[in-house]
Image (cartoon, rainbow, N blue to C red):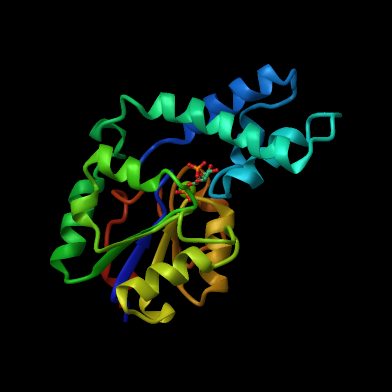
Length: 215
Ligand code: B16
Ligand code: MG
């Protein structure tokens, strides 16, 4: 019996994928890395900022020190925050508010489990915070998805066991993390058909019947 739902943020509740892509692309252009494109960006979904940087740097011949990598990740985040500046609730994916309201009425606990260190800012700007009981994000973790840490922290914050939680994710790393943590998973988003999740749907709003998933 599911008692709590842990939502990934980017790609599940909000659409920030394009902003992440534009910020990484700007950095790649500045570094003279020509081969970085949208196909590579797909592999950056759900993984940490430093792991995402490696996806960009694998296209470069230059070897960067750890200190330089920290600086590059910081620079990308600056570009990303510039793009987030005007974010409001129009960034919330279609039907999300109604789904969260309906799930709350079923007395489920709701949490976010996101790799992003910017999750609190995004939740604040989009007005999603009041829907949530708990937030677990990149600021709480030391390991990134597919490690289950971010979801285990979310479950613990809700006072629930892993098997009482359903994870909603759009990335392969996130679905892997849910399984590694002993949680059920619902895969959504453009690549949901290729995710090894327990359940899948085009989007949160496209889930026709939650009862079998929550049973
Ligand atoms: P930040 P999620 C993830 O969010 C993004 O999908 C991923 O592309 C990004 O690298 C990661 O957050 C870290 O984000 O640089 O803001 O800390 O999908 O786990 O909600
Ligand atoms: Mg995601």
